[in-house]
Image 1 (cartoon, rainbow, N blue to C red):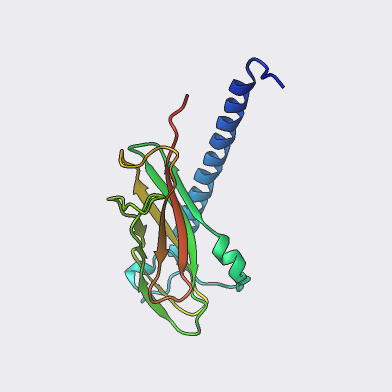
Image 2: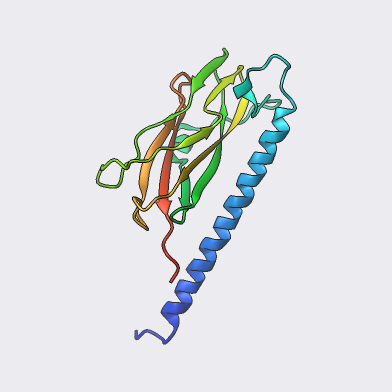
Length: 178
């Protein structure tokens, strides 16, 4: 079937519009999570540690994901070169005891395993959670020229002292607009 004139351009425009739509939803969700974290700051107990600012006590236990659900959740961060790729995730202490842990990320690698000289920043940098307590964590990274457009770079976020905290992350430099 021969290509119709303009079909390729129409398809590109539709894909670009779709990406802008989801990017806008990502920004809205991030802003909502930041506002939620700000609200949680007012719910602290007076002697709470400074890095517990974003923690919110759980009033209703969240349903526990199955191993298959947990393994399939990936945080995707994308931005233009020079811009900050940002996101947020929720950490819950499902242990029967309090836990204090720093947040760390593995080295960022390209699809061939080459390490990229970049690292994620977290807010808060460490968490302290009572049993069943939750905390919203913000994550960010400035996308540099070292990121190739359209390439998926990978890392994993961990809370070493909180078993089961393993969040796969995909980082991307946005494709230049055509």
